[in-house]
Amino acid sequence: MHPLRSLILAAAGNDAIRRLVATAPVSRDVVRRFVAGETTADAVAVTREVVASGRSVTLDHLGEDVADVAHADENVRAYLELLDALHAEQLAARAEVSVKLSAVGQKLSERVALDNASRVCAAAEQCGTTVTLDMEDHATTDSTLRVLAELRRTWPSTGAVLQSYLHRTLTDCGRLASTRVRLVKGAYAEPAAVAFGGHEVDLNYVRCANALLAGDGYPMFATHDPRLVRIVGERARWYDRKPGTYEYQMLFGVRPDEQRRLAQEGETVRVYVPYGSQWYGYLMRRLAERPANTTFFARALVSH
Ligand code: FDA
Image (cartoon, rainbow, N blue to C red; front, side, top):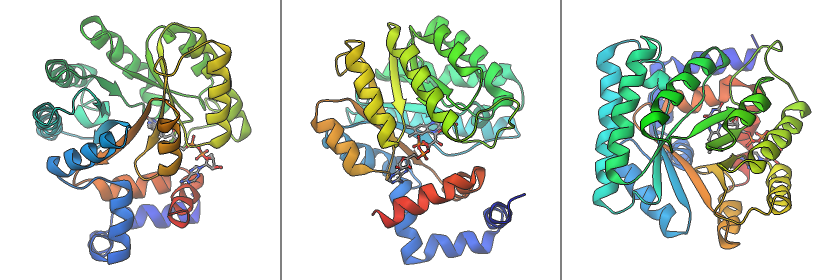
């Protein structure tokens, strides 16, 4: 294992370091830059701010890989509470939720994950919004797409996420091009047998973007990469796509000026806002998953 990666993973499991990070003034700023806070009220407050600036939001209640039914149920309840609050604050038209199936029981069984995700989708519909299923490591892709297909029988606007680093993704884009799809590069450490590396990931992102723009669905281009943002804009015009028939997405705290610039140009921009008490693992895992992510967060800090 990469020495930096093992160091970060060791820190991720260390309670003393967690407390230090949580209370040191500088790192508290860092955490607050990337995570909305721990509570539903924190998530709603950040949503209100982002929406007021002309951007939309997708909210992620942090928590992955639950190993028991009770914990999965807790995560579902957090989403239900959040959706109620967004509805009460009249924010639901501009704020959807992102759900990781592993946080609602996918490791227990696909059935548990489907039942729990259905509860979130039903609540989202009642509140006038939608759900996007985040995509996790490649071992879960087929299962996640099966659950997605089931959910879409009742809630057709449920969003998918496809990762351009996977060899399979161009084919998946073709199949799902008439639906709501978020296209990302992919954040997990994947073996070369299933995933591209380096520049190939970007080339495949462009191929996949073309496939989605050629369809009649609603593509959501989630990237901070200036070249890809520019190319997606050019390809959207080539396909005669008007702003509002696709959107850009970026993470909370990353390139906020670019987010505002795109929104001021009339583009739809959605900000992915994570919140919840599991923020420490989220930050650390993002750093550890791929060495590139370490520079990704470091770059965000120096460009603050
Ligand atoms: P990458 O990290 O490759 O950087 C490319 C270039 O972008 C850099 O060279 C630099 O120019 C610019 N850049 C990047 N970060 C910057 C910064 N902080 N400040 C200034 N410039 C910067 N993954 C996944 O596997 N499943 C999922 O469900 C999701 N969901 C998701 C939602 C949203 C809204 C986003 C934005 C991302 C995801 N991801 C994801 C994560 C995604 O797969 C990927 O790991 C990150 O977005 C990083 O890749 P980028 O495309 O941003 O560019």
